[in-house]
Image (cartoon, rainbow, N blue to C red; front, side, top):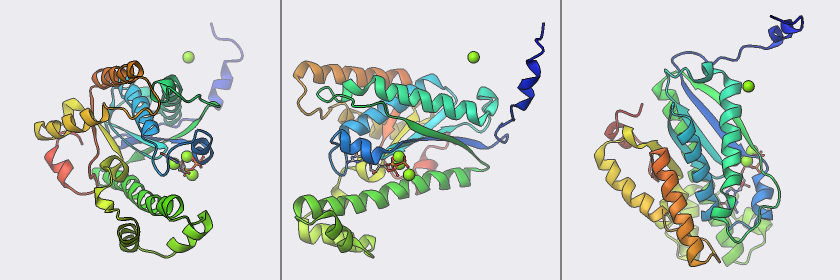
Length: 281
Ligand code: DGT
Ligand code: MG
Ligand code: MG
Ligand code: MG
Ligand code: MG
């Protein structure tokens, strides 16, 4: 019962990821520099977009049970699958395309929940790639890389937008002012010129967002998580009405429950979180 055309299947190449490696799928918004401008995102951080990204990520965790945790910052989210997973035969293209397209559709699907007063002006896209990491060390270094990127960019962007929006500098002048500065210089500039203690900026901006399967967490972290997610349940929704705000809160709470994941804004570079939660990796 095979057609004579069946042979073309042999042109498909295997892209199975190595066994016993941790699998990471990272999605990243296409052209979000422009997307954030067109949709008038707050600078440097738009809390409604962060909430939308996390809702979309929760949808992915709900659907794909082999994902242990996800880490998001800026316009990206990384999903970590267990090293023993056999999901989709560990095929890179299947994993990346399914997670990337579900993330994208969930982002669009939930847009009006997070931006009740702002129309989506064109369909956004997210690229996705799948990578295998051969050890806990390399996986943790991957996650540290993304969190270090979050820190470096957020410190830079906080200084840059303070100089432009509050210091009255042009974008070029602000860029010149920051050229060659170290982290300590930017901290000092923020404090002396704008009275901003960078360490008091919200953790969600400085550390990014970590979603962990609740069943893998140890109790003491659960307590911290409770606080973090309660805070996250009070959506900052601009011009939204009271009914809209409670609708958003209800939908966020529903997504939280269904994905059974806990939202944390914490340091994942240091050992502390991993040694306190040995069941995750
Ligand atoms: P790509 O990924 O190569 O297609 O290009 P982009 O433009 O997406 O660049 P990428 O991913 O390196 O950087 C993310 C951009 O999104 C960056 O220009 C900052 C912007 N962005 C992300 N989150 C926010 C936000 O909350 N507020 C604002 N104003 N911009 C944001
Ligand atoms: Mg991007
Ligand atoms: Mg890029
Ligand atoms: Mg990006
Ligand atoms: Mg099919």
